[in-house]
Structures are given as structure tokens and as C-alpha cells.
Length: 430
Image 1 (cartoon, rainbow, N blue to C red):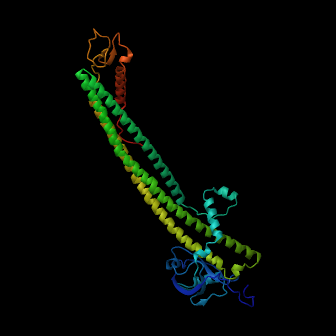
Image 2 (image 1 turned 60 degrees about the horizontal axis):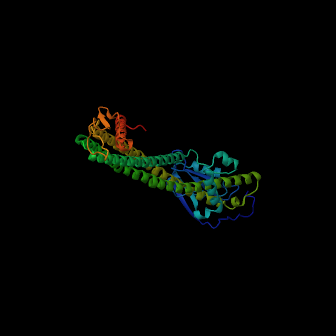
């Protein structure tokens, strides 16, 4: 194409300077230096590097990059040669090969055009869509295949929901234990008052002992609250600090990821445009003048890919540390919860076992006031005690004078029911 012209086509460098240089690369076992090339005769006056592959001699050396122009191989000019011919020239050289190049001094900000910004917005929208929806809307996008980080992000969300549920459950548990402790304290106060007013020495001592048992249970409950309360602090630290910090890192990673995908999509669109013009036999201006716009996007894509790889590595490391902390922390918190509750129930069972004071022999209530002294059953109607608890006599006094006695019966029945159902958990199945 260019041989038929009687004049040279001036390159349109878009104001991007180039610096000549050369580099000697040692080929690998496959006789490769790790680059792909594009351009060249017959459509483009420049032959340039399209991509530098990872962990190859060119990548490890770091001298050449995507977008750089190749001007010679081992001192031989490649002017007017096709990319296939240049590839054969490089392959024919064994061992070390010297590449002459023009270094593209590109500023990544030049490649951040409005088109790239809009592509980033589009990728951000498509990220939360299904593939079918995006295809139905005709939204072209670049996709990372076999992206394992997506599953890790889903696991992070499930872990956050788990900790949120544990926090709410622990708050409700502590609130219930606090109310239960206040109830035991109230029982202890009531039994203490009854014991003080009871004229029978044995019954008074029994009521006081039973009141002390309930007050001890209230102390056990407060001790349980003080032991489990730090668990809430630890859960909230993980939920409100560690996970949000990881999400912030993921947010930065996603921004870099969408930028990299936008450049990939831009390169694909420019390739399609070039292939269409070649198929139609019409020269494309940017290709005919050195394809500097395309080479600028190639350089921006390479740098965006490097940032993306580094950010992805950081995110994976942070999530790995977060998973390890989660495994260790959840085991410690559950062990603390189970051991504390087990000790609470064991202590309560021991106190109630020692406070087995029923049945209680109590005196009758006089007409004037409660607990004025014992009255014989032969002379005063009322309640009498027995082996099975409190039993009414044939003619009982009015109900409003004996409200305390039915209360004691109900408390005694509740106590027997609680003691019968007290089970100390040996393990927690989760």
C-alpha cells in the first residue's frame, strides 16, 4: 500500500514523544521473549508491541511495554516489513536477541477520555445485572472469566449476615437474662419480707434461706452478663470495623477493575473498527498515521492491568486474613458463651439444691394483721401445713386475708417445675 505512494505519510503522534533505545533479551526454553506484535505493512507504517505477557523475559526485564514501536532486530531494520516477517526474524535468533525500539512516553491521563469514563459507568451498572438482561439491553461489556473473587465476596456478605444475627441474638439474650435476674431479686426480696414477718422460727429461717438462694441466682446472672457483654464488643468490632474496611478495599478494587475492563472493551472496539475497514478496503486514518491512539490505549490497558493485579492481590490477602480471624474469633466467642452459661446453670442448680426447704411449717394469720402469731386449728379457722405443702382447713378465712398463702403455693409449684427442668448443657450443636 505504502510502496505505491510517491510520498511518505506523516505520522500523527498526538503530541506523544518517543525515545529510541535497545534491549537485549534472553529467550526462554520455548524460544520466546513474551510479546505480541501488531501493525506493520501494509496498512500501518509502525510495527508496535500489543501485549507483554506475564512471567516472560520481556516482562521480567521491564524495558519494553505495550505501545512501544519496534524499529529493528539485531541491528536489522524492519521498515516496510509485515508483523509475520518480523516474528520470523525474532524466532530465527537463538539465545539472546536485541530489540531496537522507540519508547512511547505516554501519560495515562491522556487515555482517560470521556468514552472510558462512560464505559466505567456502564460496567458498574452491568455488574449487578444478569447476563440475559445485559444482552437484552444490548450492553456490550468485558467480563473476567473464572473470577474466584466473586465467590469470596458472596462469602463475605454471608459472614456479615451471620455476625449481625449473632449480635442481635446476643443482645436479646443479655436483655432476657437481665430481666430474669431482676425477677430473681424480686423473689428474694419477697421471701425475705415473708421470713422476717413469719413468727415460726423454723419457717422464718427457711424463707430467709430461700430468699438468699434467689439473691445468689441474681448475682450469678449479673456475673454472666459481665462475662458475655465483651462478646458484643468483639462482634461489633468485626462487624463494624473489619468488614467495612474490607468493603472499602473492595470498592477501590472494583473501581480499578472497571477501569481495566473499560480499556479492554475500548481495545476490542478499535480492533473491530480496524478489521471492518480492512475488509472494506478503506484506509483508516489513525492506522495510516502510526496508530498512536490505539497504542496509547494499549499502554493504558497494560498499566490498568498492573494496578488491577496488585489491587486484586491486596484484596485476596485481606480477605484471607479476615477469614482466619473469623474462624478463630467465632470459636472463641461460642466457647465463652457456652462455658459461661454452663457455669451459670450449674451454680443455680447447686444453690437451689441446697435450698430445699419445703414443706414449710407456718403459723396461721390472725384477724388483725398478717403474721401476728400461731393459732391452734381447734380455736381458729385457717390453713394448716402438711407433708405435701399448704392445705386449707374445713373453714378458711376470707380470701383477701390469705393472698400471701396462694402466692407461696404458686411459687413452690414453680420451683419444683424449674428444678425438674434444669439441665446443664454439656455441648452446643451449631
